[in-house]
Image (cartoon, rainbow, N blue to C red; front, side, top):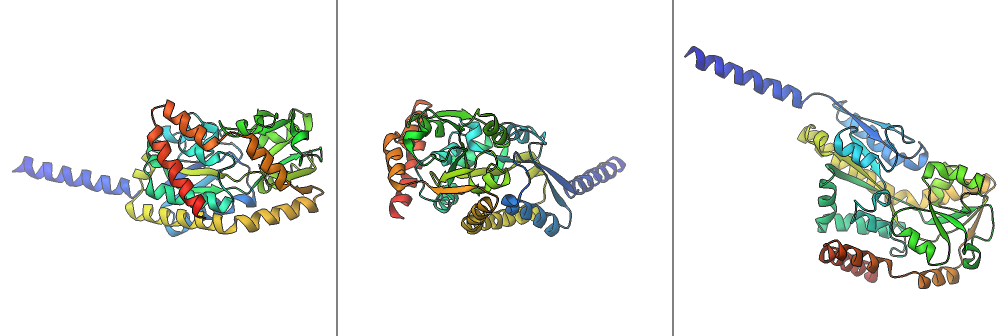
Length: 338
């Protein structure tokens, strides 16, 4: 009887310890590759809201400007548990995030809003996106939109395909360089934080970023002229380590998912206004924004291969052609029906 009582008390103690451990406060270290700016307000608001609504049971601390790892490192760092959350650019992991990278293929989406709406719908209806993140040990929370991309440099002729031939243009990922090569430009892989110096030194002739990032990184200083928009893609993913997610109570997980949905919605609702405001501030600071002529953009798209089909073909060579074709068909149905 004594042994049974002792065993029962021991089990109760262990259960109590487990319950206490499960309820312990958690501080999530979020590694961000970008510098802090108003452009990331939705992410900062998400972190604040989660901390407040969980009454400090879940605290989120964002470290900006690569302080917890570079843009091409934070995904694997989160998956290994070296950090807890990350902002992940799919194009930086073009050979690993094979499905997510497709959201950064040029000349597919007509606008940032359309790209984000397709992302949200496809994530709900198709399993491939979360399955891909599962391989890295992370869970998707929400997606960042990006404004249209602009060519930014010291030469005002950024609105001419003839002038872009032979020019060194900031590029990234597996697909955007193909769009640059299609017009005879030279794609150069440069991280966002290094673009300013690259323009200064002439190792880049043109940056390739949205107006929010042009403003946040003061690229109008080394590159007065910005021509665009040229393309619409989505931005980075906000993910959390599966191990840390499992350590959070179901109640607080529900709070995080609700706030993640709010952040994603706020991002979509605010992107057009935020980009327009960024453009106005760029001009106020001395930058010049020039529209990219529709006829020049049409010539560019005609010169480029069918990049979505190229992606499907590449995925077929990796043994995932059927899944990629399903994604492409799903996207085209939405785009054609828009």
